Image (tube, rainbow, N blue to C red; front, side):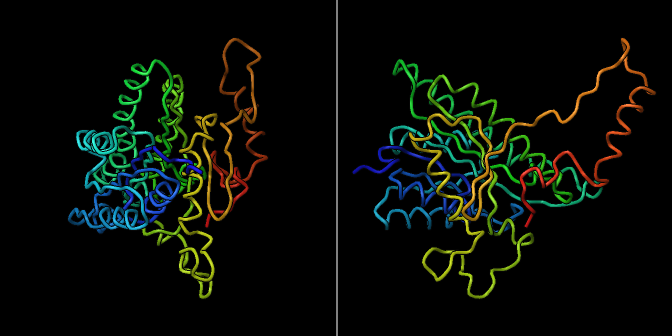
Length: 319
């Protein structure tokens, strides 16, 4: 019996640790050949010397389990390096079928304290990084589709965050980047659907070095976060990886342009924003007085601290 991703090749960015590592291992377990991309910097803020070590370790782990994998040391925020990454997949495995964008950094600061470089660096790695790899992958799939005279198997799984959905006061750069990734994904889904390519976006909640200040440490007896150790941590990245594997498969061909929140054995499908209320002017043009008469009573009846992206939109509390 063949595996769901047998004969397919994948790129996973930021796959040297945490979520990316779990996703790369899962894709390989399902039969995909994997390019494990990671820039290998020790700091979650993107600081430190780049190292091939993390990507090499994960690629070796896949090969030791009987799979196919190569490591790639590269900065996806660099347009040319992202192109080289896609070329590695095509040159090594003959084609690219699956792109999982996961690479990112954090430089948290309140909006009034954030520097230009802290803003630019996070937008560059997250949002531009997603664009860069998606651009080169989409060129490849479009050319393959034209040559084949029909659709090809192309899957993009992008990584957003509940920081976009529910707000995050100390992460204006990160929240903006993650919101932009949702817009990029839905646009890409519309553009590439006719070629057989789907693009979806996940908001994973997981305990990694990126979230070490957000979630409390694993409590004694709850497991270390690895399967089979006497209790899997509810926020282990392994809870996220199966959804990525599924979205990468042929079974998910009809799922396109979707936003899904995933963690701890739960997947929530998030609908597009809906209009909560609508007001029409009684005249040709709104006046200040009319808007005050319509909007002030409406907002007076809502919670004082409610924002557009309230956490309750998911029925979830932030960890």
